[in-house]
Image (cartoon, rainbow, N blue to C red; front, side, top):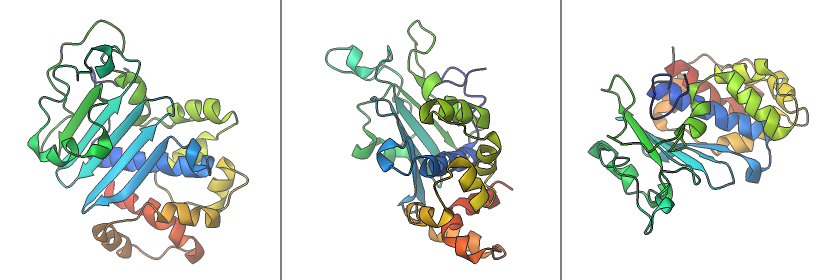
Length: 248
């Protein structure tokens, strides 16, 4: 079943979605050292106890996700979708897309960086919800009128989906075993990095990964772990490995 706003049953829960988007950002760092060519990014310290993930495809489509202590909210914009605000004059958000967003996500709704005026779909979930939510929407005809099937496809969590996309985008073999390793938040090693990008080392990734930063709570979780055997890799792995603890 294709994941979209019409069927969100395959979308991971809040913590697993956060971990997945961290993995996607790390894969981008490894496969694309050039920042300008990256699709996915992750800021583990967007605000106090908040993390932000994003996707931009360079063609006008984008996705933002905010993770807070109360839950998560995701909004996307597919510029060619029938439900694009720019399909009307003046531009107007499709009825129901943002109307029912809970007040707990008010900061997200008022954040200029998320470009709410450019929205074709929005979903959210609090830790009290048993499933992802969306507004009461009367969809126009079409297979993917809000573009969510396309933009959410990677977030269903199947590493094979990423492999197909990455091999097409980067025009080279991308090993499924290495992708799965990172999806599962296993310790980052030279072997895995070399499998994905033979011209890169863990040491070269350290500065990029450090920029993701971690919260004080996450540092406490890391400090509770046993020291990693390769101390020289700690800087590169500290952001990446902590989320595995949250999923056990």
